[in-house]
Image (cartoon, rainbow, N blue to C red; front, side, top):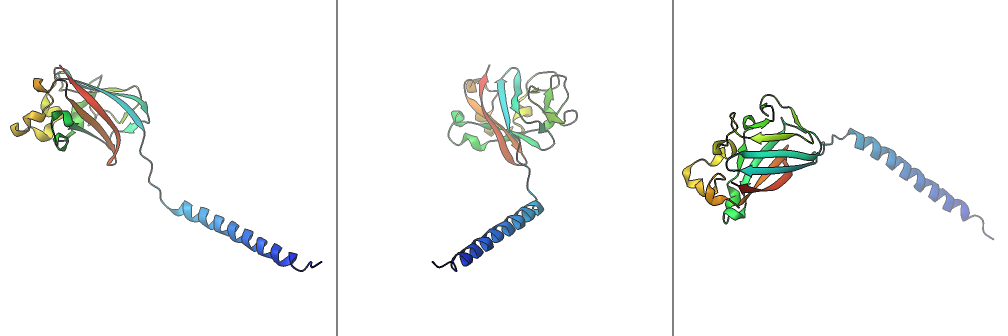
Length: 175
Protein backbone atom coordinates (compact mmCIF):
# COMPACT_ATOMS: atom_id res chain seq x y z
CA UNK A 1 0.00 0.00 0.00
CA UNK A 2 1.30 3.48 -0.90
CA UNK A 3 0.89 5.91 1.98
CA UNK A 4 3.00 8.60 0.37
CA UNK A 5 0.07 10.00 -1.68
CA UNK A 6 -2.03 10.88 1.40
CA UNK A 7 0.36 13.55 2.62
CA UNK A 8 0.35 15.69 -0.58
CA UNK A 9 -3.50 15.54 -0.82
CA UNK A 10 -3.86 16.73 2.79
CA UNK A 11 -1.29 19.44 2.12
CA UNK A 12 -3.24 20.72 -0.89
CA UNK A 13 -6.50 20.71 1.09
CA UNK A 14 -4.88 22.65 3.93
CA UNK A 15 -3.48 25.22 1.47
CA UNK A 16 -6.92 25.63 -0.16
CA UNK A 17 -8.59 26.06 3.24
CA UNK A 18 -6.00 28.63 4.30
CA UNK A 19 -6.43 30.53 1.02
CA UNK A 20 -10.24 30.64 1.48
CA UNK A 21 -9.92 31.88 5.06
CA UNK A 22 -7.52 34.65 4.03
CA UNK A 23 -9.83 35.65 1.14
CA UNK A 24 -12.80 35.84 3.54
CA UNK A 25 -10.85 38.04 5.97
CA UNK A 26 -9.69 40.40 3.21
CA UNK A 27 -13.23 40.56 1.79
CA UNK A 28 -14.83 41.43 5.11
CA UNK A 29 -12.20 44.09 5.83
CA UNK A 30 -12.47 45.66 2.36
CA UNK A 31 -16.27 45.54 2.51
CA UNK A 32 -16.24 47.54 5.72
CA UNK A 33 -14.19 50.29 4.12
CA UNK A 34 -16.66 50.94 1.33
CA UNK A 35 -19.34 53.54 1.86
CA UNK A 36 -22.77 52.17 1.22
CA UNK A 37 -25.75 54.36 0.41
CA UNK A 38 -28.62 54.02 2.82
CA UNK A 39 -31.59 52.23 1.34
CA UNK A 40 -34.67 54.21 0.51
CA UNK A 41 -37.45 54.04 3.09
CA UNK A 42 -40.52 51.93 2.50
CA UNK A 43 -43.88 53.69 2.64
CA UNK A 44 -47.54 52.96 1.93
CA UNK A 45 -49.75 55.98 1.26
CA UNK A 46 -53.44 56.55 0.67
CA UNK A 47 -54.60 59.66 -1.13
CA UNK A 48 -58.00 61.23 -1.80
CA UNK A 49 -58.69 64.18 -4.05
CA UNK A 50 -61.80 66.29 -4.30
CA UNK A 51 -62.21 69.29 -6.58
CA UNK A 52 -63.89 71.19 -3.74
CA UNK A 53 -61.73 70.03 -0.81
CA UNK A 54 -58.24 69.44 -2.21
CA UNK A 55 -56.08 66.45 -1.39
CA UNK A 56 -55.65 64.31 1.70
CA UNK A 57 -52.50 62.19 2.01
CA UNK A 58 -52.32 59.53 4.71
CA UNK A 59 -49.29 57.39 5.52
CA UNK A 60 -50.72 53.95 6.26
CA UNK A 61 -47.49 52.15 7.06
CA UNK A 62 -43.76 52.14 6.50
CA UNK A 63 -40.72 54.03 7.65
CA UNK A 64 -40.71 57.61 8.92
CA UNK A 65 -39.87 59.97 6.04
CA UNK A 66 -37.58 62.96 6.55
CA UNK A 67 -39.47 65.79 4.89
CA UNK A 68 -36.30 67.67 3.94
CA UNK A 69 -35.35 64.92 1.47
CA UNK A 70 -38.83 64.01 0.18
CA UNK A 71 -40.28 65.42 -3.06
CA UNK A 72 -44.00 65.15 -3.96
CA UNK A 73 -45.09 65.07 -7.60
CA UNK A 74 -48.50 64.83 -9.29
CA UNK A 75 -48.86 63.47 -12.81
CA UNK A 76 -52.04 63.09 -14.93
CA UNK A 77 -52.73 59.49 -15.92
CA UNK A 78 -53.66 58.29 -19.38
CA UNK A 79 -57.34 58.90 -18.46
CA UNK A 80 -56.59 62.52 -19.43
CA UNK A 81 -55.49 61.38 -22.87
CA UNK A 82 -52.46 60.07 -24.62
CA UNK A 83 -49.12 61.40 -23.32
CA UNK A 84 -50.84 63.25 -20.46
CA UNK A 85 -48.32 61.85 -18.00
CA UNK A 86 -45.64 64.19 -19.35
CA UNK A 87 -47.37 67.13 -17.60
CA UNK A 88 -46.13 66.48 -14.09
CA UNK A 89 -45.84 69.09 -11.34
CA UNK A 90 -43.85 69.20 -8.15
CA UNK A 91 -45.98 70.17 -5.15
CA UNK A 92 -44.36 72.91 -3.10
CA UNK A 93 -43.80 71.88 0.51
CA UNK A 94 -45.34 75.08 1.85
CA UNK A 95 -48.74 73.92 0.56
CA UNK A 96 -48.62 70.55 2.33
CA UNK A 97 -49.92 70.85 5.89
CA UNK A 98 -50.90 68.62 8.79
CA UNK A 99 -54.18 68.75 10.73
CA UNK A 100 -52.81 71.65 12.84
CA UNK A 101 -51.88 73.75 9.81
CA UNK A 102 -48.10 73.26 10.13
CA UNK A 103 -46.47 73.05 6.73
CA UNK A 104 -43.78 70.76 5.39
CA UNK A 105 -41.72 73.87 4.62
CA UNK A 106 -41.57 75.18 8.17
CA UNK A 107 -43.06 73.04 10.90
CA UNK A 108 -43.07 69.36 9.99
CA UNK A 109 -39.81 67.41 9.95
CA UNK A 110 -41.05 63.88 9.25
CA UNK A 111 -44.02 61.92 8.00
CA UNK A 112 -44.83 58.87 10.12
CA UNK A 113 -47.38 56.06 9.86
CA UNK A 114 -50.79 57.40 10.89
CA UNK A 115 -50.00 60.99 9.87
CA UNK A 116 -52.52 62.81 7.67
CA UNK A 117 -51.55 65.79 5.53
CA UNK A 118 -53.47 68.07 3.23
CA UNK A 119 -52.80 70.10 0.12
CA UNK A 120 -55.07 73.14 0.42
CA UNK A 121 -54.60 76.83 1.04
CA UNK A 122 -54.55 78.29 4.56
CA UNK A 123 -58.33 78.69 4.70
CA UNK A 124 -58.83 75.04 3.78
CA UNK A 125 -59.96 75.78 0.24
CA UNK A 126 -58.48 74.03 -2.75
CA UNK A 127 -56.62 76.08 -5.33
CA UNK A 128 -55.16 74.57 -8.50
CA UNK A 129 -51.92 76.53 -8.14
CA UNK A 130 -51.16 74.63 -4.94
CA UNK A 131 -51.22 71.26 -6.65
CA UNK A 132 -50.22 71.89 -10.26
CA UNK A 133 -48.11 75.04 -10.14
CA UNK A 134 -45.90 73.92 -13.06
CA UNK A 135 -48.73 73.84 -15.63
CA UNK A 136 -50.90 76.89 -14.87
CA UNK A 137 -50.79 78.24 -18.41
CA UNK A 138 -54.25 77.89 -19.99
CA UNK A 139 -52.85 75.71 -22.80
CA UNK A 140 -52.59 72.96 -20.16
CA UNK A 141 -56.18 73.35 -18.90
CA UNK A 142 -57.27 69.93 -20.24
CA UNK A 143 -54.86 68.44 -17.69
CA UNK A 144 -56.00 70.49 -14.68
CA UNK A 145 -57.39 68.34 -11.91
CA UNK A 146 -59.93 70.94 -10.76
CA UNK A 147 -61.96 70.93 -13.99
CA UNK A 148 -65.40 69.30 -13.69
CA UNK A 149 -64.96 67.59 -17.06
CA UNK A 150 -62.12 65.61 -15.42
CA UNK A 151 -64.33 64.09 -12.70
CA UNK A 152 -63.69 60.35 -12.72
CA UNK A 153 -60.25 60.71 -14.25
CA UNK A 154 -57.19 59.73 -12.25
CA UNK A 155 -53.75 61.10 -11.61
CA UNK A 156 -50.66 59.78 -9.88
CA UNK A 157 -49.31 61.01 -6.58
CA UNK A 158 -45.62 60.16 -6.55
CA UNK A 159 -43.23 60.48 -3.64
CA UNK A 160 -39.48 60.58 -4.16
CA UNK A 161 -36.68 60.08 -1.64
CA UNK A 162 -33.30 61.32 -2.91
CA UNK A 163 -34.68 61.16 -6.48
CA UNK A 164 -35.82 57.54 -6.05
CA UNK A 165 -39.56 56.94 -6.32
CA UNK A 166 -40.75 55.28 -3.11
CA UNK A 167 -44.51 55.54 -3.62
CA UNK A 168 -46.92 55.92 -6.51
CA UNK A 169 -50.67 56.08 -5.94
CA UNK A 170 -53.39 56.43 -8.52
CA UNK A 171 -55.88 59.00 -7.21
CA UNK A 172 -59.48 59.38 -8.40
CA UNK A 173 -60.76 62.90 -9.05
CA UNK A 174 -64.00 63.36 -7.12
CA UNK A 175 -66.41 66.30 -6.88
